[in-house]
Length: 456
Image 1 (cartoon, one colour):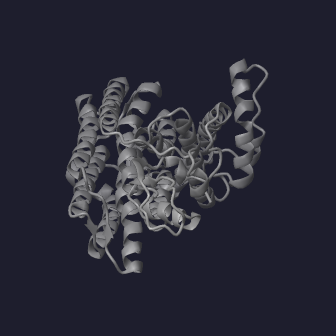
Image 2 (cartoon, rainbow, N blue to C red):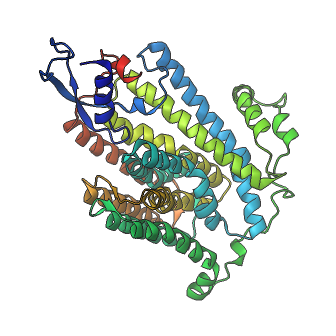
Image 3 (cartoon, rainbow, N blue to C red):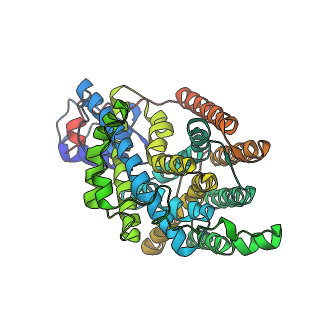
């Protein structure tokens, strides 16, 4: 088989993002003009590492350690970004619009931290032409609901009394979102009207949030104006927003403990990088928020890439990587931002961010790319809906676990809720990974003889 035919075979059979299997042809003893059919090799699945640039694909201990350290530092950078820029800019936005913290968490923070999922879905729809976006959204949805609740409850060190109304409101919308996704994907075909309805429903959700205070006043007969942000974050006595100079020159004091000094110098390169590229929330907070979204997208992509290399090098199966690394990588912003705001005492904002992110993921991150694709290409989208009933059941179950665990503790976000969600998430991973292992297909070795052909 000549080189051109070989490349066409690979590109014709490999749908990046959908991870379809293909049979690798073996060398034939016949010449290029022979009509004999080459003998196919056993089917294999393309590894997820080919989704990323052709860098550090060769298995090496050095590459593995380097990528692991890079991933850790990206987590540190994301923490600095959310604490110094994302959360403060949203605080200023809340103050300017007189919003409640829970609505801000369900809208602006959810949209900002869901930027990686939107990027993945756009790539999957228009470039990869696969179903990668659906898998990413489903995996990150389970992480958002259970893992973030566990993170805030177990590791934040605070007990936060939540208002039952916003949690119930967003859980209702999350359930409605799942049901609509099931209806759209049921026949494996996405038509124009379905994409329009799915995308438009997010604006119905926003309208409901705009009138949320009036609805609460009617249904609960309570004054909810007290929950709006009335204290200017720029002039408040406790933890006011920092200027550029305070961010860059906030060196530790002599009396500070040694670990604080070490931590400061470890994160200082990230502080400088973000400071020179992102305005502080005290200046142009809208631009600060937009730059934070850009950085969240870039850093989430880099951490997913780095962790994929680590998993590939140590031999973690590709399907298991999708359940763990890819879901974790795209949901890091939600986890970090929710952890930060819950420590500030905004528990409802943290949970509404986690649940509202899922609503944004399905209505916008999936609805918008589908709508553009169907409208531009003038043809319906065909997706793989195998296991749709199980996927729907898992999403509903995870939402129910989080909600009823909060209901059982009278909406106190603490260690009890955290441990329930943590154990549930661990059980989800164990069951999912076990099922994947039982049905695991071999992964193509990209370092084998056809590697040079594939990467040309």
